[in-house]
Amino acid sequence: MTAPAQSSISAAPATSGQLATFRLDGDLYGIEVEHVQEVLRSQQLTRVPLAPAAVAGLINLRGQVVTAIELRERLGRPPRPEGTDAVVIVVRLHGEAVSLLVDSIADVVDVDAADFEAPPDTLEGQARDLIRGAYKLHGQLLLALDVQKAVSA
Image (cartoon, rainbow, N blue to C red; front, top):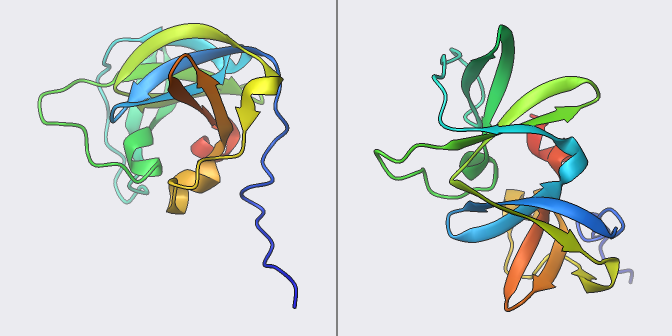
């Protein structure tokens, strides 16, 4: 009898470098700095009829229309509290800009591949598929987000 394949656990290999970090529902997440184009305060969203729930809308970024992804929805977290504005992280993947809506921006941190571990067992469902792994940093866990998967529908 063979064990079931756990493809979500065999995530991308750990790398050393810098991660731009942000908070979402009290947890700390990070994405590779090279993907981040800019960080903006809350932006006016234009809703898209019949779009998937994770598509919060479209943002006009200096004349460029950019899709806004609600990371709380993508990660299976509760909606942002009423009256709380999202921070927008604009990422660039394969030449295209996409924005991620998060609760707050944190720091840029240096990470070491030696501190990288598989995603925590407490992550379930869609969140588990979107997290490459975790870094232990000074008493807190930094969840490394797979940006490519997070922006894919």
